[in-house]
Length: 226
Image (tube, rainbow, N blue to C red; front, top):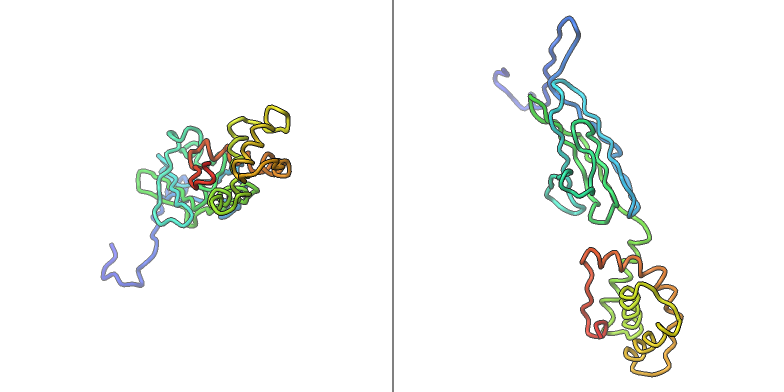
């Protein structure tokens, strides 16, 4: 009981119990690492978490705040289809699999015991990097500028075609269709498309396919759709 409490009494109070066996505390201590990191897209990232104190933890909950967001969301590890692993009493550490831009943000670990709840004092904050980031921006630019630039529209059209076919070469099977695409975009004949093949197939296509799987990428401009 604190009588006549004032602002000087603000702070954290810890109760210790001592017997012949030693000292115990009812406040759990939660520590996580790393505090911050930049993660390459596609890699797995583990946030190590240690929970100490008595009574022992009865449950662990991780919360995530997206980069630029203001609200924290609980991570349902068991229902994440393998996106997250760990986050349990036996393994408090959290592993994020196949790190993506949407995984960037801050992560906080909460530990519950019979007395109450404790959390790490500092969240773990992750950013992302990797070649896919820049490539994604280039694909978006292709999509958005296709209406005004026929070369851009051609590049995007070829990208869509490659994704649909799964491969690209200048063999007869492909060259006829590629030429038809190019001529339709430029409204001329005898268009040479080979200079665009290398960058589209080796750099843009892998990211395009991945984003198509996620359902987050759709053409919208008339020239690009054509």
